[in-house]
Image (cartoon, rainbow, N blue to C red; front, top):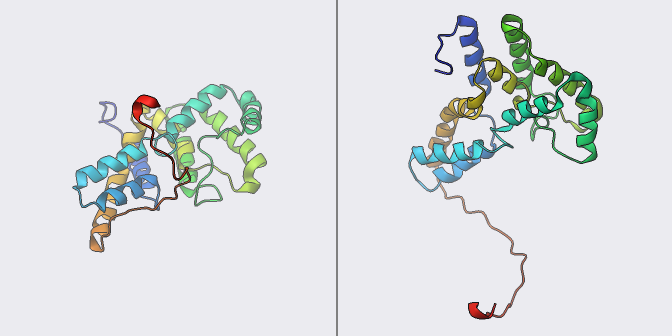
Amino acid sequence: MLNEKEPDDFLAHVFDTCLTLHAEHTMNASTFSARVTASTLTDPYAIVASAVGTLAGPLHGGANEEVIEMLDEIGSVENVRPFLDAKLASKSKIMGFGHRVYKVKDPRAAILQRLAEQLFDKLGGDLSYDIAVELEQAVSEKLGDRGIYPNVDFYSGLVYKRMESTDLFTPIFAIARVAGWLAHWKEQLETNRIYRPTQVYIGEHDRPYIPAENR
């Protein structure tokens, strides 16, 4: 279904493993969106749609696409450290690194890296992988003491790219998470209370009303 080709057993195993690794994982942004939507007692289709909308963001499910673009931008192993130095100097985000929970290398990233290596051994290498390994090493040296290591997005894009599914990264991610989102939906219904966050107003008080024609 990904590329209109019947996969061999190895590729099918890789894909099944990826779906398992991308299954529901803590109270992340898309899961929280699913819970908020579920709390309104809407239908499960709307719940999944709201979670997918959140997952599509480049800081969440779309991050692995950003990783591939970053590796392409770096272009060579030799350019890794100058690229990283420039990013750190400008305080820019380095895609595929850091996690709210993990302050070590994401265990899922370690498994995905092994899958990537197996894929490249079977189907041929990819310069992007060599760049990624060098970038991981450089980031570890400079930011490891702050608990910043590869997360699940760092190597997953390389795996999907080699499996010829570049434009389907986020849909694949979503497929893996639907079961978890719906499990949260059912759990929410057990003791439901609508999510209604409070907020703190920091604007001006006692402002006079000015008619629109005088503004």
